[in-house]
Length: 99
Image (cartoon, rainbow, N blue to C red; front, side, top):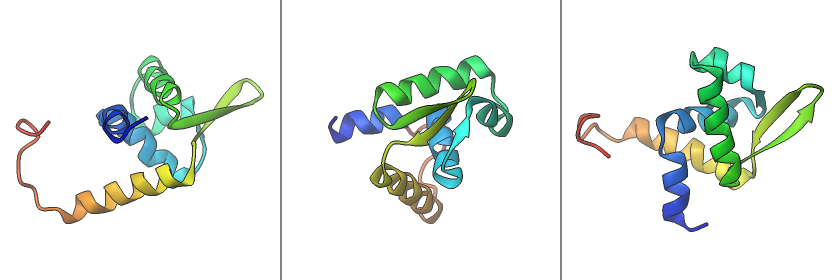
């Protein structure tokens, strides 16, 4: 995967929220995301499937649940750095004009 494809995969707001939660919590199941994000299970599952297909997250079965984690430390650090940097950059455009 090249850098542009990686950014395309994580640029969706819900996917980035999922990654941010994983970066802070290390491992979560679908129900955890539904509760924390206040979004429907089908939507969360769809985004997790996309992130998994991109190789950004991985899952392991724990009984009837799938537990999700970020696939490697470099990606976890990237998400952390993006979150930190976004808090330091002044707002240069409104949400309507960016991306």
